[in-house]
Structure formats: structure tokens, C-alpha cells
Length: 170
Image (cartoon, rainbow, N blue to C red; front, side, top):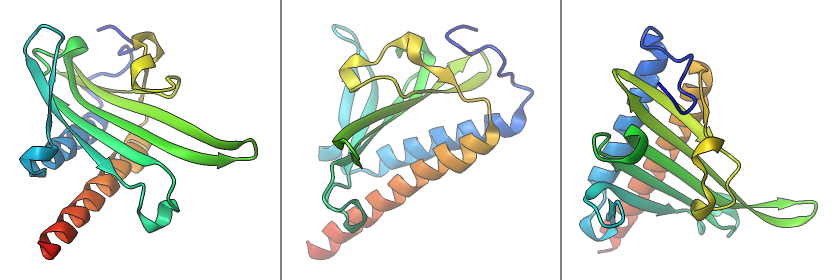
């Protein structure tokens, strides 16, 4: 194993099950998205490695009009770099005492042999500045379930509600 995956083993079945649930939730959300909203992801000059959707909650009442976007990607770990299976990107504006600040974070599920490894990166300013060496493993099952999985589920439910609203108006 490499890229910060040391210390997370297949013997931690609860963490493995939570990480698998994250992949399943992302995959289900991408599969549920109408075709025009799904973007194919490819390696430059290479094959398609996955699909991505963007969920925009900028105009949701709880965001008060602040930028709030989630991108969910499901990838083929046999083709995607670093054995990546799922990617969760969050970008939002946050009001601080210094003014409005754009916050970006990313979480990634990678397959290393039979193990699934959950990683996160809070150091990139945006998608273009993500550096592989900044990813850190999430080894806490409580954090994986209570924060990562719960957040994905919130976004997926919000997107289902958005799609239901569009369908009821159409």
C-alpha cells in the first residue's frame, strides 16, 4: 500500500463497510442523475474512467445565497489513477470575520488490493490545485460514518428533492 494507506487494514470491517457505503451512495446518486447532468471523466488522451455529477445548493434557503456546490464522481479503480473509486468534492463560501472565503475540500475512496481506503484533503484551494501528497487517511470509523457518509447522504437527498421539484413542475 502507498499514498498514506498504511495502518488501514481489511480487518477493520466496520470502517470497510462504511467506506463501501460511501461508494454505494455516490454511485447511486450518479446513476439517478438524468443524462444531461452526467459528465464523463477521462484521463487526458486516454479512456473514460468515470462519471461525475454536480449538485448546486447555492440557492437553498439554508445557504442564504452563498456559493455551495458538491461534485460526486464514481470511477473505475482499474482505470483511474491511484485506484480511485469515488471522489467527493465540496466547494462553498463561508462568512468569516475577514469577509467571504471560498472553502474547498475533497474526499477520495481508493482501492488498494482488497482494502478500501478513505482519504481527505483540505489543503487545496480549488480542484486545479489538488496535490496527491496532501491527502491523509481517515482511520476513524465514527468520523467516516458520522461526517463523510452523513454528508454524502444529505447531498444525495437534497439532489433527489431538486429532481422531484423539477419533475413536479414539468
